[in-house]
Length: 452
Image (cartoon, rainbow, N blue to C red; front, side, top):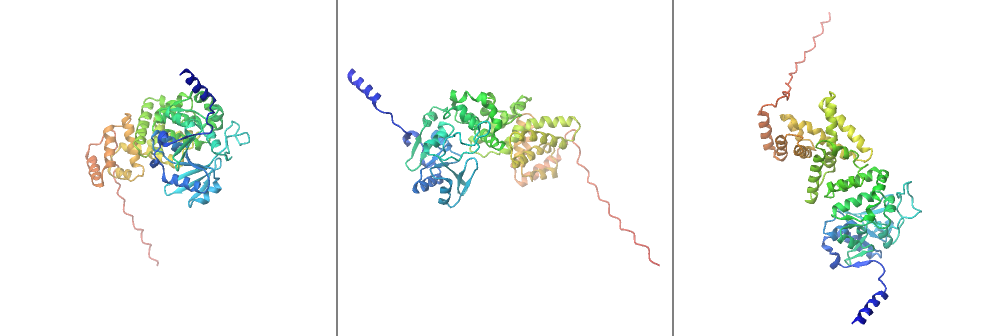
């Protein structure tokens, strides 16, 4: 019996280990093909029929394995963008730093990229090592190597229903472990946004960051300042809408990564009631994400920056400025400071202004003024924002509820509510309605004297 045990041990030592990636079947990875986008499957099938390799890749595979619903589906293929585009009726090549193809099916876009080779010394980088051009094509193994984290380097073949795993990403997912591929410092230097992604994935998946992956972040956090503002805005939006925004912000602050994203966040959280307001905003955002509801970036950033707007608004009021000009100056100063670091798109900043400028108007319930407010496109969002202020103790909760009831009412009920509000005694200190001034009739010009 001892001899048999020794033979088995020696046999295992002499048996060569399998080379190449792991090929994991559905009984192990757990992906249900019915949850995969039929358009992503079609892209893979068309490319494979033409003789190319094609797989669903990245975040969609990760989310399917852990039981989440992917927001979108990406495909990686051996075909170049010029080879992909003619195969689909609606497809266009996009990107400069990273060229790829958008294959359009109605409202869904399948982002299709060619296998990339890992970074090398010939690629164009800035003085900090960040890659500026990334269009060196490679094979599937090289493409897996150049991806950021092991859980994002998984390829799913919808035809065979196998997951191809080069870096033990499935095992890391099962263990809820965030592990970067390659040398962490070098990978962060190539793209500093990877540090933010590590924090976001850890919060989203309730995972821990591998020690070797976390260790360089503290000393390399300042590299975030070299990332284009538009990319920072996109990454910050993903972070705030991942369903665990408050956890992400706490981790960002702990790792020193918050500088350059929301520069005033520390100032906001140090203001009296500031942390409570931000927590309320993010808790409600997280609840909407988890319930599958849509999120308004305008509302979210308006909430995050409101505390600073409110503080400066009061400062300008104390200096003797009228209400609306004071608010206007406060809004301009906050947005000017913020957009230096993060490019908030103009359409979002415009909506934020409307939400903020609506707030002082909620203090009065005068007939025509109320009707004009109802007609504003951001009226409902402004009412939701008012509820947030009321929950934080910044506005009368009874009056805030009246406005929310008005927003939810039909036209007949609204007219009744406005009429009832007009009959209430006017609060102390609120000015009376301006009296209508009657126009004086125009005098007819005197007739010219008769010509003699």
